[in-house]
Length: 124
Image 1 (cartoon, one colour):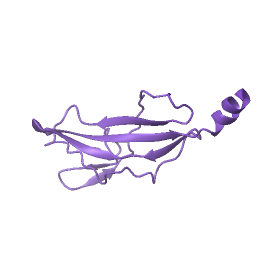
Image 2 (cartoon, helix red, strand yellow; image 1 turned 30 degrees about the vertical axis):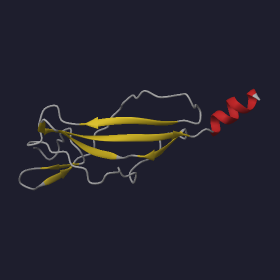
Image 3 (cartoon, rainbow, N blue to C red; image 1 turned 30 degrees about the horizontal axis):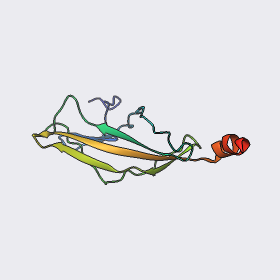
Image 4 (tube, rainbow, N blue to C red; image 1 turned 180 degrees about the horizontal axis):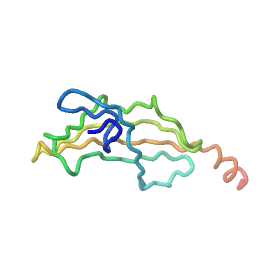
């Protein structure tokens, strides 16, 4: 692999020679179904599953460093939501142990101040 080229990989790409290269992590966008029954005092859960469609566990083994994702490098993009928790776990197919994935639940809470001031109070 050329030093200036970076494949679509996680933050660290470890080679069989034990050398590693620091590549920037990929950017991911996703859409989740939301439940608005308690709007604007709601909490949402968006489950994202990461796995390789090309390689099995013998070639790409996804490993969790912790059962909760770190928010150290997180920069909030919106004043509308707070991240409550980011639990993660590893799944192995019981029928095929080479079929693994890593799943994260993004549990977010809506900050209701904007909606309370602009929608609820004027309606009273």
